[in-house]
Length: 334
Figure 1 (tube, rainbow, N blue to C red):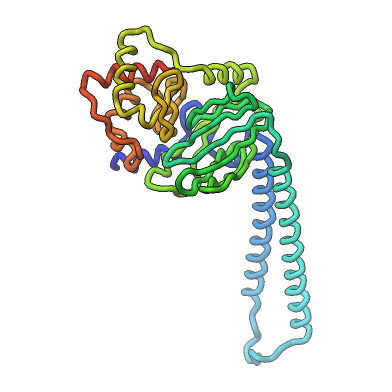
Figure 2 (figure 1 turned 135 degrees about the vertical axis):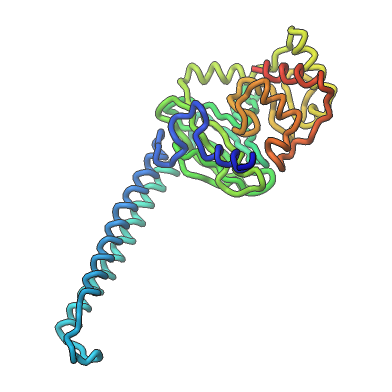
């Protein structure tokens, strides 16, 4: 097995630290609960229909004509019973379809009942990562991060979905169903986590070569922990006092990195790649592909195409002695 099939296999497994499997039946919020109930209702009813159909088919196959009977001859009693059975089946099918439609409509009302969560995020799908902007009435409290969403437990969060290139699909199975992010249009979805935890999400619409490695994390925490995290994210990046970190910062500011990435509080103001102001505080880099460690950051800088072939990050020419300080600086951005 080569490296790429192995990475694709890993993408189907739960990320370390996540609350359970990435499954629509492992529910941790009211919207996901509604969808799971709908699934089990459909499964129970349609399984019953299938079993009854198979039983009737077997009974029909067991019926034998007597030797010498004319195959074209009909019996009024048999024809009457068949008419009753078929008519009843048609009526029952119509009732089942109507009932399932009503149940499905009721679930949809729960999913789209309100759009007034106290916390609003603008999530933009890009090849192959997620840009996350926390909106606020006060411009000073808005900030941008990437691939990791923090939310307070037990509160509704409104997600505004957009795309900057192709169609993506935002899906956190344990919290809600999926919804497409379409270029030129804004869709909205609501999520809520009833229990603290880390929930894995992903792009659920094929969007290119690295679609399988376009993951994200939703971290649900207490309101106090969330406010502490948000205050940290609003702040600018720290100015390093460690000599190696200072050297890494100098390298970053003199390389093409600043053309794509932003680090608030510095002259790096790029807008086309993930905001790195607090990249060291995120659990993963490269949209859920690698844990955030100094070694993985260095490997990503040196050869992003070797880790995610087709990713839009170009290869930056660095001297061997520049790699370690740069990785150290980026890891320090907590």
